[in-house]
Image (tube, rainbow, N blue to C red; front, side):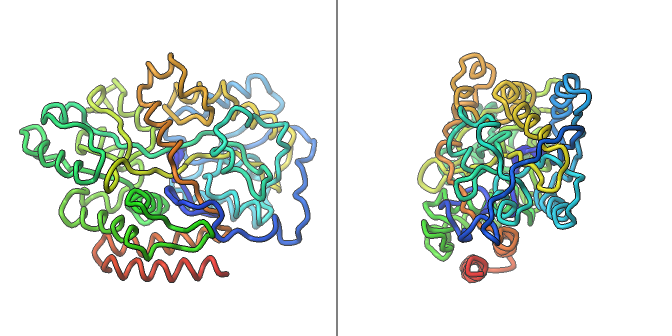
Length: 435
C-alpha cells in the first residue's frame, strides 16, 4: 500500500498487504539462492537517481534540491513512477532483470524487502552508515531480511479513519469505534439536510494492492489474520468470514460508496475533499491536502481523524511505509549511501511531516509538543502504527497478493459468495506458500 501515493502507500512483492499478522510467512531458508553474502556497495561517487512513485504531494523535489545544492557533483534526479504500487513493483523488477543502472536508490513499499533481497536485486546495507537508531524498531524491521538490513525507512504509515467532524457534531454523534457505530452515525448524518446526498464510507477497493490492504485490515479488525505464526494462510476462519462479509455487505447496503469499487488512494481523497464522503479510510498524507485553504478542498477545517473501526471495538491497521534501498546494478553507490542517510534523517523526516503530513519513522516526533499542536492526529497515528499488524515475509508476494485481490474483489463485487471466495483464497494462498 501505499503510503502516500508518492506514499506511501502501500504494496506488492514480498509480503502480504496492510494488516497481515505474522512475521514469517513462507520465508525462504537462505538470504540468496547460493547462500553467498550480498556485496556491500562499491565506493564510487557521482550523480544518482531516486526511483519513486509519482510525487502527488509535491514535496519530494524540494528535498532533493537541498541535497543537490550541497552536492553539485553528486546530484540526485527524481524518476517518477506510476501511482499504483503494483506498477511500481513491476518496473523495479524489469529494471533488475535487465541489470539496468537506470535506478540507483529505490523508494520501495515495505512489503517488497524479502523478494528483492532474496533475488539479489538490492544490496545489503552497512548498518553503521544509515540512521536507524532512533527509529521505531518495528518500522526498521520492515527493511530487514534474515536479520540483515537491506532498506532504510523513509516514512512509515498506519491507516486512519477520516471523518466529517462538522456533520457528526450536527448529528450529535461521536466518532465510531465499531462498524455498527459507523453505520448508525451515517444514518444520523444522512437524516440531516446537509448530509442526505453524501456517501457513508470509502476506502481502497480497486483490484490492486490497496484492496489487499483493506481486506487484511477488515480481517484483522474482526479478530482474524491472513497467516498464522508459522506462515500458514488462515483465511478459512469465522473471523476472516466476518471481515470480508462486512465489506461485501457494505457494498450491497450502500454503506460503502458504489463508486469505491474502483477507488485507489487518490480517487477517494478527491471525493473526501469534495465533500462527498462522511468517512474515509486513508493514510495520513490526506491531512495536509484536505486542509488546504487554496480552494482545492471543501472540507478544510471540517474533519477529524480517529482509529479505524472494527467488529467489536477499534480496528487494526497494517504497518505501511516506504523504504530506501540501493539497486544491486547501480553506479555511484557511495553517493547513494550518503544520500539515504540524508533523505532518511530525522531532520528530513520532520520537514517531510511538516510539508506533507507524512508519517515519520522516528518515535520522538510523535511526542514533540510543537508538532502535536500543529498535527493533532499524531497521537492517533502513533497508536495506529504501534498496534499495526506486522507483515509476513513472502518472497512470491506478487502471486500471494494476486490471489487475495482476485477473490476479495469477486466477493465485494458480488460475483462470488463470501464463503466461496475465502475457500478459493485459502487454497490459492496455500499453493503460493508451498512453492
